[in-house]
Length: 226
Ligand code: ADP
Ligand code: MG
Image 1 (spheres, rainbow, N blue to C red):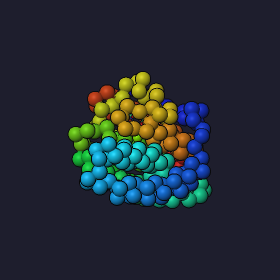
Image 2 (spheres, protein in one colour; image 1 turned 90 degrees about the horizontal axis):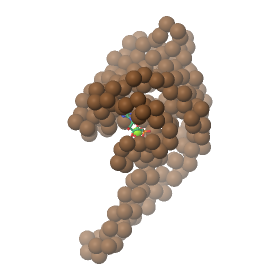
Image 3 (cartoon, protein in one colour; image 1 turned 180 degrees about the horizontal axis):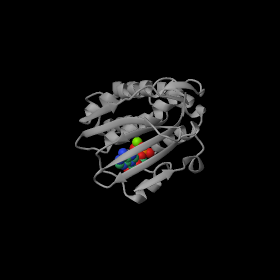
Image 4 (cartoon, rainbow, N blue to C red; image 1 turned 30 degrees about the vertical axis):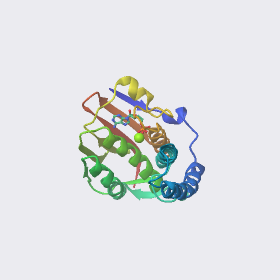
């Protein structure tokens, strides 16, 4: 099943501001979480322990939501520049590697020669990380995620991210990118929305090929520059 996702029409609410807020909110949340853990003394009544546990879980959930907008680091400017794809992919793999290892997932990359695009590296990372996280999470028993890229003969860099996971039905693919669409117990349903919006802002496109119980391939097309 193959479908081109036109996401700018679907969602146009994410801005640079979102990630600035996200960063500013994360620090006080971390402090609160730390104090909650200190409050959680062994001899507390059961009920109070439960309240503390719930508070910590809720904070963790809020943190997950922030991660979908701000995987790491401080948001910089939204300025696009000339960046090299292979180099960026290698950096992203470094960031996501340990998450993969925790899930028994190996991330393989095949990087050909140098290719250049016009984009913002931090936002590109965010988009790729959200897709890679899903690829890893789609394989509950582990497996391989393969990242490759080529240049097309109509002026695009074509990045492929392929997993061997649970796959999606046509209906599921159609809902990708809508806010709060998630099949995961503690999913945010925001990762794909953010990814698509970012790629769109680089005048790129995302395509998805997926087969239930076989796996999924995300194809990201970005205008090539020289
Ligand atoms: P979340 O990961 O928090 O659920 P996302 O927006 O990142 O939210 O993804 C939305 C949904 O799309 C996921 O819950 C999952 O059902 C589906 N999905 C995304 N990527 C994949 C994939 N590689 N394989 C299978 N399902 C996927
Ligand atoms: Mg996700």
